[in-house]
Length: 235
Image 1 (cartoon, rainbow, N blue to C red):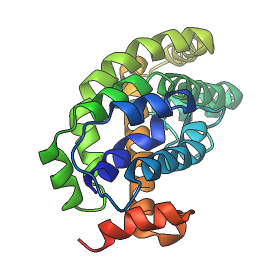
Image 2 (cartoon, rainbow, N blue to C red):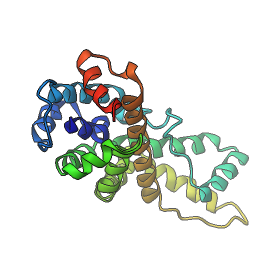
Image 3 (tube, rainbow, N blue to C red):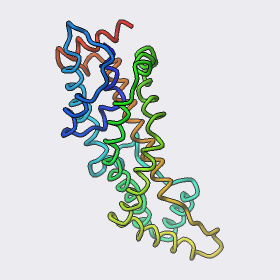
Image 4 (tube, rainbow, N blue to C red):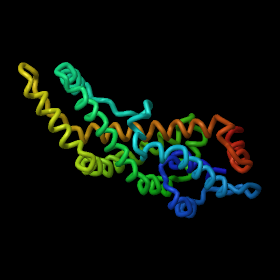
């Protein structure tokens, strides 16, 4: 039964081409001879992919999702306000959009790291997740992957800034703002900020999906899923 726990932290960020690979690589931490746990895992992974991965990596996956949309850091809120006051609201809007575009691009790089986290999950990890709260799997993934994800996301976001034009837009924004008389000049590290916010968004979506599959019977859309997660309901 414990194999089912391995899906809770990873299913939202694994692309379809890797489903079979992930299922085959999962550590053997127990079997239920009367239930196809592996089959249930594959179904849950497919469900998670269709619900979450495309949301975060698609255009507007961050920008139009109010749960994860990246807003400006406090030090840049005054920049935004000043630009709008001098009639440059369109530039301010574009600056916010390109931060979210970079995050959408970076999330695509997370899959291998989550695959490794699933492979390394021990029997003790799985038991703790089973007996844990509704976001126990998310917490495990967050604790075991944040450092690696940051290292992966940061250069991707830096490159994405160039790809989506964020570097030019924000150079223009900062130059315009710093040229306004009497303002305190700013020089923010937007790569670090966007990386951190992208990670927060990823784990927030994982937590939502984990809670759904743990608590909402309607999220178990097949007989197999219903049987697999009914075991967890009895803990």
